Length: 167
Image (cartoon, rainbow, N blue to C red; front, side, top):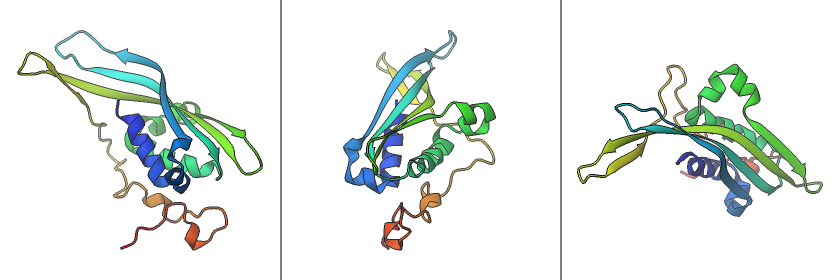
């Protein structure tokens, strides 16, 4: 399964607080099932819930949700294309720790198709299938581009949620 690692990398790149404290983010898989059918292909699909936990987060939880939605748009787009899924399948809980920090837990249904091909040595080659392209939903040329103009609380240019890269 590759999506939990991809999501971790994306959130860490998007949230400066996670760059400073990467251990504050935990992602684990629950409720997994395999979808498979008998036929000419040995391919299958992982279906599971990703539980994303951010501990002692000192920003606004909305700062987490925006990069999460950008990632979903590139990696699990059907959650955003299906109105019912978009309003009910992405769950979260926010638990205040003190006046400045919260623990945030997000539940996200994910799926990953896997292709299986016989190998020349009698074994099998197992490879994740890329997400299908859906016309009109092309990803941004730079996946964090939407976040470039969003400021952290305080609004100072030095506190961009996603700092500009030095060129």
